[in-house]
Image 1 (cartoon, rainbow, N blue to C red):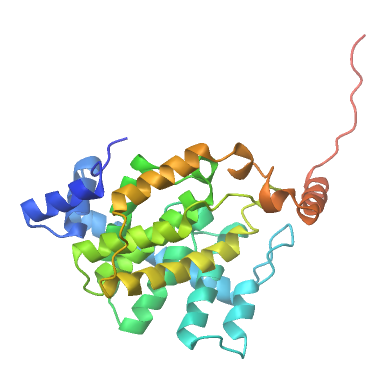
Image 2: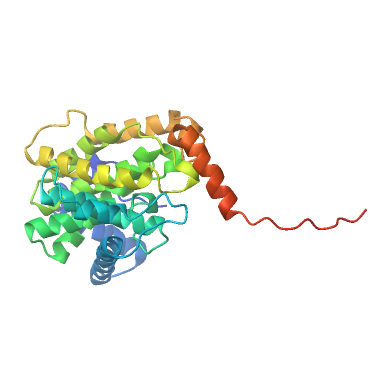
Length: 302
């Protein structure tokens, strides 16, 4: 696989030397890799964002109950709850991230950005950001390009897969993509975008992947909501020019090192963490018995 750049440092140098924006550099990469025109790349992004918006609406309007029963219309319950903890905008953010991820858990259509397990984070953050600040779909698409560039470098220096690096690699990477996109869409500088990524990664380091019954439902869905809130907090901090202190490339390297040293039972095997709790094991046994069809024994030749 070809990568955009080897590091965020290289990405910054390229943009400054060529006098191009972050999204422009990613479009150049995409055109080179796919032999496509910028217009075609833009159209694909707008289509992907439309799917994200549809996932949010579906999760808030349709019946979202998974086959296991662990997912039971949580997004709608949050969205319609009369008590607002912080603000209506925060309540919408959380419910939208839950909604899109619940669609994934209920076998609906989502955008894996960067993975299906983290598919509620970018929809929740981007739809809410667009609503609050009145941004166009085209501006959001530029933010998604920035997020894509962030993911390409994380993939090279660490991982995007829970089976390789734990949940820090999935929801952590998605939150980093979202925070960088938020800062870019609100006019932040290149350094502020990368600082937001660094802050986000610092907040998500070490998060294990421990899906109950091996399903991408618990705790995956609620982690999408938490990661969406972290993306916004990191963006707010970065826009205020509060330094992450540790450079973004070193943060990603730390993520890779932690993922490599993490025990396999904490990397999507459902052998540790929440999956190994008494209740987690009971759910696993119930779901497996429910889903496995027992066939009659066949007579074997002597």
